[in-house]
Length: 131
Image 1 (cartoon, rainbow, N blue to C red):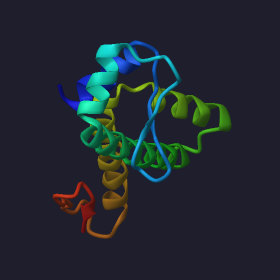
Image 2 (spheres, rainbow, N blue to C red):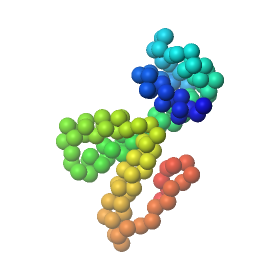
Image 3 (tube, rainbow, N blue to C red):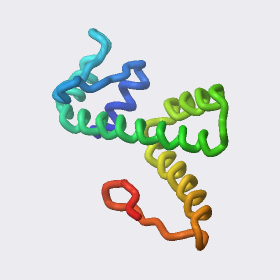
């Protein structure tokens, strides 16, 4: 079972796991896991922790990119709150794609505003933008 599948199963059951501050454990409400879920979490704990941490990083970056887009359009506080809620409602497996979309749209605006028009931008293997 993959970390993605485990997380999807937990979320379907209304269980939202989080990682402990020392990044060594997973926190869920007491008694919420079925025996099969508990076994899956324990069996794949290191991979699930890594996946949850990566998803958290992506979500934080996505929220920041979404707020930058709101800034570009001078959105009011209501629109910004709606954007935050929509980002958080985006399924976990789609957040990276949405982040790329926001970054591409932001970069297109920046590139077109620079002297000489659009310029080429490449993505590094780490998922960060390299100019």
